[in-house]
Each structure stands twice: as structure tokens, then as C-alpha cells.
Image 1: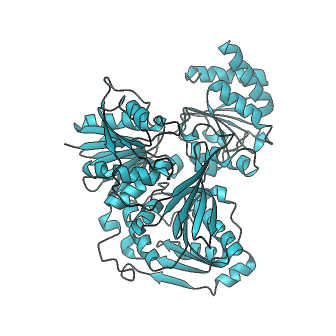
Image 2: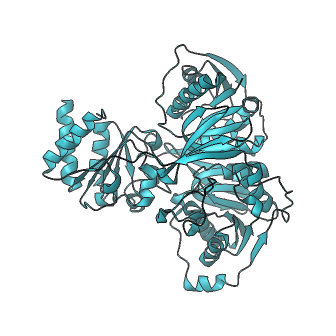
Image 3: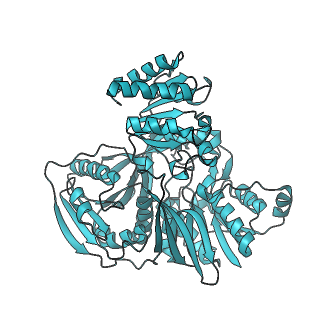
Length: 322
Length: 263
């Protein structure tokens, strides 16, 4: 009987990362198809809250309290603490977040297990069959593991998180270091004023590009994002101009996102940006140039000045939400 | 003096939009001209600036068949000191496990204070190989770097790691492996002088046997993953183009969002 383990990610405030609830939902459906078992594990200084949340999605969760989780960088601590649980599970599912990717890489080396990355879907056919989006969404590949074990990193927004019918049990465990990984000390944690929720997890993204023209120009992007309950994104041109931090950049050397709605303001949609967002479910663009590349793959394009159309959309949204 | 190894990977130029798979579902490396993976160029630029500030030398290490010479020459033209290319027919179709093992074996032959790499590659986008290499070599590992500041006297390195809310400042003893992002800074273009100088720089080629890796221990034959098939995603519906007065256009946009239950 196949066993599947979900490694949950804990946010700075001690809660469960949204992506981990999605991964757990996906893992539950895979385990059902496999007629196997699924469980979860979380590691934090105080894992109580995150473990309880994860147990809302999975029948059994192990909560590991790690005294060094705060003063050392997370992926090494997590990989070390989950090593034993991972080695006895057939397949591991983890979010394709920065920490998740690092944990997957470390576990892959420690256990010699294969990794299938950035899953956009996982089914079961005598083992996990993992769908991945390649070349910025040009192709969808289906892959499997050669042996009976493996690690899958899962993109955000692949499934909607759905709690299980009944909450699972939480078992406490200690962080008996499973692997002797070199320590990396966290000497400072800096929060930036502009920082927001991880943009990869956003269901709605309003993004600005070169056409926004200035840091002040981003006001309309931010206002629309707020009105739609979304996050603010940007193309590289806007980041290079210093109008918005790199953490919000979408594209080839930034984040790859898959929101339900991508509203692009003043973004031409060159290939380097397109590969980061073209799998969005709905793409709406406002651009002065009707021949901009984004007009070829957006669902709806408004040809016009974003500083006229943007405020008009904002007013219309506000009038309807009354 | 700082000794840095930068891991660089030749990838099909993403700007070509010509990437494709071979009939047996491997990346067709002849489909598009090879370029240095974008994030690796940021790591190389960071290495060049560090060596300008502290003195030292840069070795670029690549594991590849097609395109390895081209990207190594470009890195040397940008200012790297020498190149090491690991190439072997058995490496075609290597997975993340093999790639990490081979690069770790190549690194064991080199002396360094820092190993730098790009956070992920534009062809594979996995971002897991550098963590695996650090683990195999027992190196402290810092990822998502926006800034890298070595202290040669203390033999430590400080790294700004991008976090969901800002950044964390990490400190690790050297030698360490650091995976960097675009936030490290724009890579330079090779100068004509650099291109000329690159012609006489040392490039060493290593096979699996040279690295002491037994036949059949790494490479496509022992891949832990395999692609079963690939398909094109369903084409997007035709684009609806809206022109006209901003108020009318805005109503159409919001109607459209409401139809799709996005508001």
C-alpha cells in the first residue's frame, strides 16, 4: 500500500502556508486513487497551530518542535527533522515555494530520490503521474518515477484547498536531527514596507509594466489590486526601473504565477514575461499598442491609456460593490 | 583573495521561443541557440564584482554536451578565469539526482571559498539541484540571494535571502554554496578586450571516468524520472479586443470579470 507524506510549510506567524493546504488536498486525492495512506508533517519552533491546520486536511499529522527553527535557516532544519519520516514514505509532496524547493533538493541528495518539479496536476497510475508545464506553458508533460519512490514539488493554485470531512490527529515528536547538515545562522529578519503575501499564491494579480511610467504610476495598479482583493505584480522593466521590488517580478527570472485573473497594465507581454504568467486562467490587458504581444494571448484587451481606463475600471468596480 | 566557482548551464535561448522536445521526450538542445541560463549570469556577475573587490579567481563549471563551449567562452569573455566542462555521452537525459552527483564530483577536484549558481534554470525551472549539491558536499547552503558579502578574515559569508516579507540575513562559514537571483544585479556584456582574452584562457574537459564516476552510476540510464508523453495545452480562446471611451471599456471589462465570476 502506497504511503504519501505531505511536508507542510509554516509561515512567519506560525500558521500553515496556504500552498501546504493545497498540497494536502491534492495528496488526499492521490492517496484515494492509490488506495494508499496519506499523512503530514510540520516543523517549527512551535508547530502547534500549523499542525492543527494541516490536520484539517489530512488524517494524521506529526508536529515537530525544533528549538533551532528560528535562529537557523528553515529548509535545512526542516529537511533534517523530516528525514526519517520521508525515508519511510513512498512519495513526498511539498509546495514548490522557495523553502519547498530547497527541502526537496536536500532530501533528494540525502535519500537519492528523484524529484518531479512544479507539478500542475498529479494522478495515480501504479505510481504518481505528474503533469508539468514546460517552456512557459507551451507544453504539458506527464512524467513518472522510475522506482517506487520520489519527491514532487507542487505549484501554487493547482487545486483549491478543501478540508477533509473529519479533522485528523496530531502527534508530537522531537527534532532528533536526522541529518548533520551544516548550520546557516539567521542573524537578522528584515520586513520591508512594500512586502505583501507571496505573489505566487495570489488568486488575482494586477501587474504593471513599462507603461506605468513611474513609482507614482503604480498607484492605480495598487488600487485595482486592492479593489479586486489581489496582489501587485510587475514586469522586469518596472523592477529594473526601481518602481517596485524584485519580489513582485513575474517572468523568466522572477516568479511563475498561475492566478485565476491576471490584469496587466502597460505590459507588452514579451516572451520573458509571458513564460511567467501565460497559464493564468483569465488574462485581461490594458495597453495603448494594439499590436503588443500580449494582445495575441490575452482573453480580453482594452486598447487605450491605462491612466484613463484603469481609474474607470476602479470606479466601475466600486460602483458595483456599492 | 577569493576563489569562486560559478555553475553555469547552457539553455535554449528562451527569447527564441523555439524550445521543443525530442521524439523520446528529452529537451532538444539543437532547437534553439544555447545561451547562459539567465539566473546563472546574475551569479557570474556577482562573482566578477566580488573578485574585483577582494581579488581572486573564478572558475566556471558546466555539465553539458551541446552548447557547453559557447557558454563557457562567453563566461570567460565576461571575465571568468578558467572553465571546466564535464561532458560524456552517458550524461544525456540526466535527472536532478545525477546532475547533482556529477557536479559535486567535479567540485571535489576544485578549490574554492564560494560556489555560486542561479536559483533555477529557464529550461528545467526545478531549482532543486544546487541544494542537492551542497548537501552531497556538506557545504553550508544559502538560497534566493539578493546580496553576497564574504568576510575573508573571518572566513564567513553573509547572504541576504529573499523572504516572503522582505529578506533574512544569513551567515555561514566558507566554503559555502550560494544560489542567487536577478536581485544580485545586471550582468555585464563582454568587452572586445574580454572576448580576445577569452581565446587564450584555460578550458578543461572532464569525462565521468576522469571524475571517478563508474559507468552506469549516473546519467540517463539510471534516471529516477521519466517523461511519459507531452501535449500542447488547449489553445486559448480568441482575444476579445475592446476599444472606445474609457467608461464604456471599463464596463465591458467589469462585465467580463463578472461573467467569469472573478468579482
